[in-house]
Image (tube, rainbow, N blue to C red; front, side, top):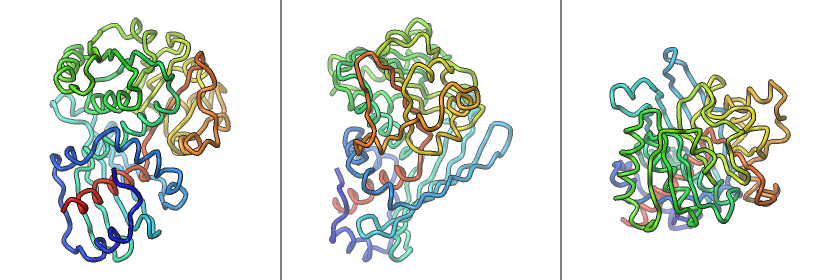
Length: 339
């Protein structure tokens, strides 16, 4: 795992002038869910306050598709980088058997302005999003969590499953649901073959969402839902609900009852104005903004996480340029180290 850059790293940053292009294969070989979770755990408390991260710009290209720009930069010696992610969101791509999200990420030196690296922002996003959820699960989910229910079987689903397994090695069963049943069963079969290191974990699919929600010690959602899929009344006592799908006020993966029953935490302040589950809950008086906790505060110990085994916890992530930059830092410095 890459730690805070040292003098050698800074020297390398100043010397290298030819940008590195990292293929998808390179990213997969460098990144691992457990090491990225740990990198976020150690780096977020010290870097989140020193990074400049403007509110991301989102442009509606059509009624359903969007373009997002996510910049972040730091001029501190320990993190001498500028990063920009360009993202397109086309949910209708599923009908074409194509991913709904495409992205590119470019890393620059904040010392010289030189381009340092270019990489597939989609792969970077899959890892960073899932590992933020994994970190929240590590802090908020019960230590004895046995069953993970995965709502959605898109590109993020296998990464979320692997991140939760890395964060909570006590997990013994993963149940996958998707509107298209075959996608869920195909993913379960694929993970049976891939997750050799999680020997003993059972992967299965189930077409009855209401039936399986109550089985989940951890319920993770990655969908484009605009109507609630997770009903709060179905959550078991002590469950941890993780949601990463919505980033607009019109999108919701859970209902008000889930928010009312749980103690809510978010990855950053943008979630308070972007996440449909929360915006609606605030408007309807289900909860208040001041009652929502933040991931960085949990890591620092400034906020209490899970208080008891019966409590329901809710974590909502909308993503941020901070974790993009930290993930790109890990990739770039690992690449330089291995040259």
